Amino acid sequence: MRRITSLLLFIFSVIELSAQTNDSAMFKRISDDVFTNSKAYQNLWFLCKKVGPRLSGSPQAEKAVKETFRMMKELGADTVYLQECMVPHWVRGAKENAFLVDVNGKPVNLNICALGNSVGTGKKGIKAEVVEVHSFKELDELGEKGVKGKIVFYNFPMNPTNVETFRSYGEAGQYRGRGPSMAAKYGAIGAMVRSLASNIDDYPHTGTTTYNDSFPKIPAIAVSTRHAEYISNELKKKKGLQMYFRTECEMLPDAKSYNVIGEIKGTEFPNEIITVGGHLDSWDLAEGAHDDGAGCIQSMEIIRVYKALGIKPKRTIRVVMFMNEENGLRGGKKYGEVAAADKTNKYIFALESDAGGFTPRSFGFTIGGAPLQKLKNWEPLFKPYGVYEFAEGGGGADIGPLKETGAMLCGLRPDSQRYFDHHHAGNDVFEAVSKRELELGAVNMVLLLYVVDQYGL
Image (cartoon, rainbow, N blue to C red):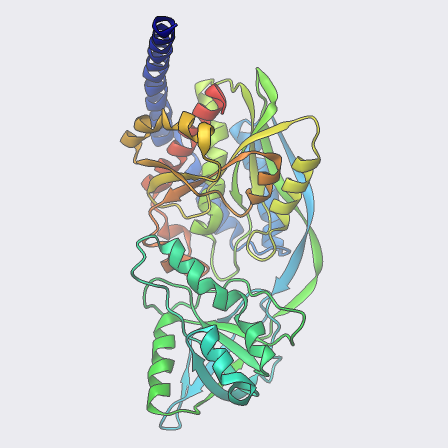
């Protein structure tokens, strides 16, 4: 028995080695084709410059649906269709205005923006004493006596000691998300958060706040990191400084929108679904180039490559442009609901790109065990293309609901050091994306889907 077992293991290893030799050649074909013939950079330019900011419910979001539908048709998808979903419709209104009355009694203008889904102050704005806190514990210690009638300033910098900047973003994000409601709990009339940015700059970074219905909804803004430092320094000189800000944002009734879905039908296992995508919506301060135009365009490139090289997938590959990740996740939830109710198809794998168009470094997977160990057999083939690790832990917000179907979830992990310079800010524009880095990310996404499609999990 031992001799038979050893012989079988030897045979399987020879077969696997032969397969990987063939795969290495295919990897090179795919990479060469992307770097030579890719439409990714061209399509990203169109999405950024001809469509522009794509906040859910906006005319630009509607245009983005139409244009990405067209793109996937032109790239060669077997079928392209829309999946309806209702999305929040928040509008920023007139440009925000703010100033701090400094220690000399002089008003100093501040770089601010309203947080997504925030209520506005109205045209008159609000003026009150600003009080700085660095944690929810400090807020609780101040209580109603120290907060009521004031503007609470959450000054919580992203932790610079974390090399993985998304970890720092997660730690700081709670103040943007929960901060306004926690301040309202003690009677604050406004809230301001330090922008979630890795570096000191002049751009305010927006993002969603989530109101707790148990407390009043108060206006909420973000201030640039440079002005956050300035305000903090002024408050060290003199407590009780007054601040003014005006925002005219408002939430309108939900609007009808769509996920855009393009498919290449599987030839052997058409009912096994491989999902790949990014979110089509973006914040309204810029063009959404890194967040998440890059991820959308990289995902669509998979269609072009398969058609250009004549690759016939065994399983159905479904490219999804998710709507409303930024301030509601309605598109991802809708796709997940439909998938969970789907008795015909089996959702085996989902890949999301939503971390910018920077140089790819690794893939993160939410389901480990035997499926991940199987994929790790191909990990060495990815190293020449810049991906050095298949790690546990990863995925994405839009594909998260697919976990209920049993699908393995995966996220592309580009280098994150510059991502939060642009994230949700006015400088997230086409010019901030490198053509070479964008295409290298697309290469690795195609390679990973090729392995999953050819060998299953």
